[in-house]
Image (cartoon, rainbow, N blue to C red; front, side, top):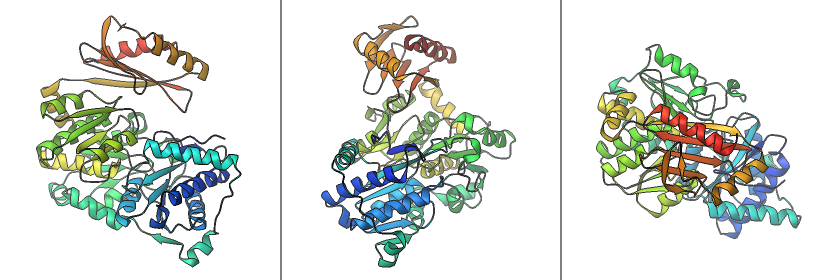
Length: 469
């Protein structure tokens, strides 16, 4: 099969696409790349999540790294992606590999590459990796490996705990003592994933649900979105807690539930934390958001005189800017958020703690903080829907929108467009609609943000008509 890296790594269905054979091909190509670029002699960090067979897949990658003369630090147990990414930079390793399919359903697993700076592999790097995989297959490149137990005995692979250094970094960034002293009643849902036990180790007074190892994730994909957090919402509605935090399967994405028991989306989280960084932490820098992220970020950046960049979807694009410029904060609609003074990486654990810090500093709930900002910049409503679309129909739609895009939708004139990742139409009011075909699935994603909920629904309805689905 053809190996393609998506927005963050290569993923596939276990035993169909994500097999030991395919994993070995990708791992060998990665080792070839690291050695060719002079990075292999700096060593490699490997981590894994709690998915089915993740530990076995991680050990196979370690065998191949050792076989190619690359020293491996392998996490001794499951670990969150941001902890592994931090370990890459802290140890001065040439790269990191995380075995995880992040928020995908339980039948998936994946292979994320982290570069020496502690962030997701840049687009230029993943293109090269894809080319090496293809070249190796065409030229029948042999996979070179040392059996795991032999590699351990030789010291070619060592087991380590990535938590100590990561926790030190987190405690430097967030005022954990303040959060503890204010006595915020918070509960975390790690969704049975690799973030289980991490926030509660930093803040022992915080409660946690769904902590056990469960490769089926309780029948709910480990994605921290509203429909997957009903139990967490119910706990907040009961009045027992003030804040609910949720992490995805590898803890690099964040979701939340507010004091009213309502889902608090990534757009809301981005807005609240950005203001907290500016007003309370007194940090400065530019702001980056992806094409599907709320306009509230644009308006907040303008309010504080901060430069704003908009990128295609995928945190790797944000990461590129974080490496090139002084970026205060970057984020995307899917819950991936990163901040200045850390690694150029999504970190659900750190961002969750920053939410608690914002509540502790202000003495206000999440919804109250958001409403105060909206009173300043305007109130917004947002929604995304996914529709199935066959590949032929998808290609026809793409060609039609490229060659003959609509000049008005729902009676509103299109004043500008952004076709960098999908087809985004911006209206005079500032409302917008995004039609984005998935590059890896037979799915069409439709996004809209408007000043009223009715406006959002109308735009999405028109988008479905335009797409014919």
